[in-house]
Length: 112
Length: 114
Image (cartoon, rainbow over all chains, first blue to last red):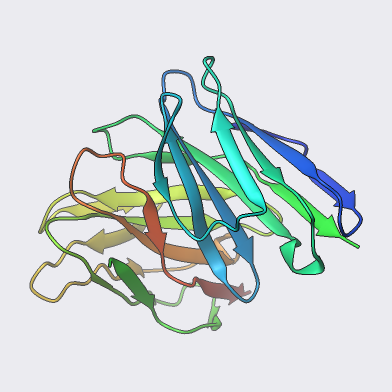
């Protein structure tokens, strides 16, 4: 157990639908990062939150959004899903200044 | 922007062979460098890291040295085992507060045969 918890582990949904992925960071970590892993694009950074505020944005589609709550857990919302959104979605957390990023086990999203 | 280039895979070795996976980077300042490993069906696990030039990260028999002059962080292991079969990712985080995002290479799949 890495200390970063992601739910659900697997998700199958239809095109056009909306899903929410959840991440609880390791205790004490203030930053949460979301990544998408697909066969053709590799590991792509989506977005980072630090203590409730958006800090950095990467290749995140407009159909996707995220937030971090006061208890520091984060949710990634994916809407108007397309077949190409099928991927593994990872979140990671870290403690500023201690260069270690811990990853969750991921959510495998399949859009049919 | 920052980027990481890894050697193309897949790499297939026999047990007890020597492993090298090349990794070079482009970054401003003094990034931190990482190797992550992903076993089949699992998430990413930190294998080793180095935060400044000439640092050597090591773990489970794997080593990598932060070479600023050649902007490289090659992963090595003297004698691989079947259990080392996985995908290996080189990554960097930009210099700064320590909470910059990780930038990953494309990954190198390693298969070790008995």
